[in-house]
Image (cartoon, rainbow, N blue to C red):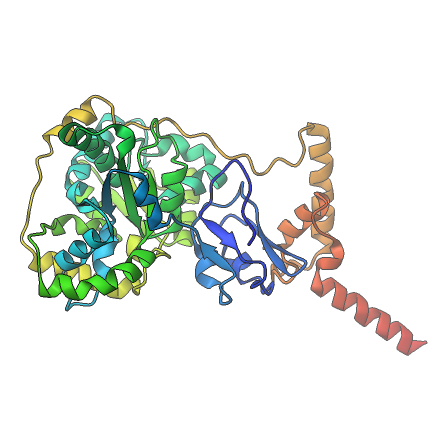
Length: 431
């Protein structure tokens, strides 16, 4: 197994024995973080944003997700789970959301809370932030960790436009940690709070939170892994239902478009975008000031929002339909948000401004960097411009850059190699 070693944590590993060097992952990476060298995929940890695209397209199970094991629950006296809103959409319709939530207690959790509990409060908080920051337009949502890292890597000029507040599950964590420690008489180290998440980007965000002043959570479990564990307890939960409250109204947060619709009002215009290629297109337009008419843009790297996360097990469209059905049929419940409002006013949910990730530096010496840029252009003229990825680099420009940096050779271009072999064969024939 190839671990990604760098100052950045990543929730993706490569099983080199399984890798065939097919380059499918190279072609779908939005930040050109993957190369195939010697028929094995390699990930540049400085470019990787943990979007999970490579994991989704790999047909050989050579790229696998990394999340925590349930064994770490034993390290804590009191164990709390916070469930992503997309969790509810993973189960067949004969299993109620309350039963799916109840089954989590059998895994060793003492309390289970939901992201959906605070999403309505989040809408109010987002509106207040937008109104208080009229000089920044548009404001970009920071709920998707993959998008935040994409901006750091490819669109650093837009970092000031990010919504500089914690995401819902982190807000709930901050509130619960203080509340439970006080109520249960625990030491902070005795309380373990864990997220059940739909994608590798959220796992990464738990282990290396961007802009957070405090490391809030103690671990993250994938929805797919948890689903496999709770299946044996679901029958008992259905046949012997406990009094488990659910907050279904806020489950809309898992669906693309809904957050923008809820934020949108008389003085705020919002836009929703999902799918990483669409997100890249919109961010380019924001950089060029084509979308200054919008006050708030919700950006999700996954199809249909968090229901499309690579750690889910259900088709995103089916999951979306199930969540809508749950919302329609379930009774509305509300929580007292006054404690959250007080924490917000005290600045407890603020995050620090983020720094860009430097990935394009050709050389520390400016003169050498200029020389290398000229060499890149020289190689680019020689290359066919097909961007076929057969060489193991995502594009001809990337190959030219790799050649100049000593990471590849012009002979890696299959098109040029075939052309050269054909010319040699024709020359020999003519002789």
